[in-house]
Image 1 (tube, rainbow, N blue to C red):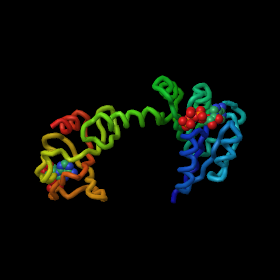
Image 2: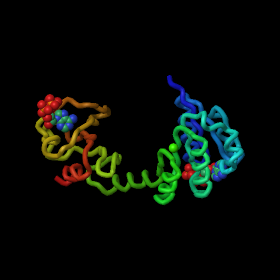
Image 3: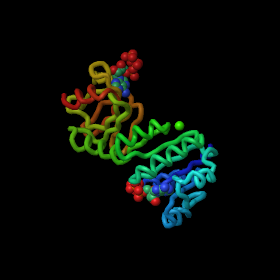
Image 4: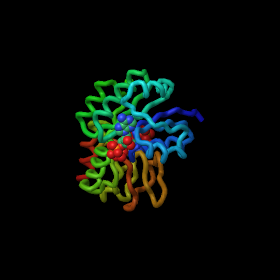
Length: 217
Ligand code: ATP
Ligand code: ATP
Ligand code: CA
């Protein structure tokens, strides 16, 4: 395995979960927080755990973050600390910087600073839940771009008994069925000649307007 070396700064719920998950996957993790309790709590799970104020330039420099494959700035509520940390990490020439934003303005600032990837864990999950709660037949939803996404949906009634070949999904809706959830199994790249069952769930990739069109057929 290609072992990665990752640093996580800010050990709230999100940072702690990311740090543990990366370590669980067998990679090296440096976990950093200004709060000694949080550092102590995570230390059994990660390669190194360090108490440091990431807005203190000298302290941050001593971590040699430019040696890491990626640095995750997971400080959330304290926007000033989040932005200052992101800037100092960027200035150290870290290859890949990922930072958590709580709102869109903070996200724009992080992008101006040069952060490679801005993530919005709370609002992303909230948006996804809103879609799941309000869209007919939609079980799950993943936004792929401003105009396109991936949905898991119940098989529309008019498609039950049809095959992908006779469904017209690609021709009439410009939608591709990437997988079918059938009983407990996920059938990836499904056979276009197998009839769809009412209990099947379709995992569809396409433009949002095309997906909406199918949902409302
Ligand atoms: P979550 O939802 O993931 O818990 P949050 O924004 O609510 O996120 P906080 O409790 O704010 O989480 O967690 C951010 C963590 O970042 C805290 O453990 C806090 O001690 C740490 N932190 C804040 N400022 C600094 C700093 N300057 N240097 C290092 N760590 C910091
Ligand atoms: P074509 O010659 O029409 O391009 P093909 O050989 O690429 O077809 P097949 O796998 O034989 O494709 O499928 C025939 C038709 O079945 C496709 O043209 C398409 O309409 C439909 N189809 C097959 N797989 C899918 C899928 N995963 N999602 C949506 N439609 C599909
Ligand atoms: Ca960068």
